Image (cartoon, rainbow over all chains, first blue to last red; front, side, top):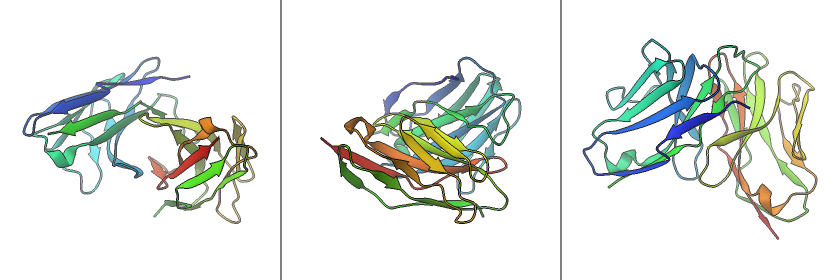
Length: 118
Length: 110
């Protein structure tokens, strides 16, 4: 089946620094990738939709200057948490659709990145 | 707007018990419906799906039937195992994005 990877799997950083998380589709091309945030014992919250070659579409309430998304190729999207603070600590999950995606099909999820900001 | 509601957890069962996790949805039209499973510290894995009314999705002993008349997609398994302990998410596919339920944490005791 289709595989999506994320790197790093966990990261600890100091408050005020920036952290970049990568999401890669390993065996397919993804025109659209999604970034989710998950708080402990809660559901996934969609942060933004990333389209290759264009600007990301952010969900209401998500600061685009805080969470920078770049989707420069059909296999890679990056999420940069700028000037991270402890409240940004969370589990970040990406997902990807392949080029042939139709609404009946699923997305493929990455394993997640756990961010801890001290 | 589109939404998904799951039964509140956590759910704790003994091994070999029967499992039902309720899921209902609201939507315009007939979305595809999914169950995802999340094991501790991991991302989401697709467990099963159904794309139209009366479809039954099944995988690893789990089943769910797309019920248009009750707008439901309840997850069932006849005999759970300790390895089924995880968080289960019901979801519907809208025009552009997945909408998730709040998740149900399942713990199976030996």
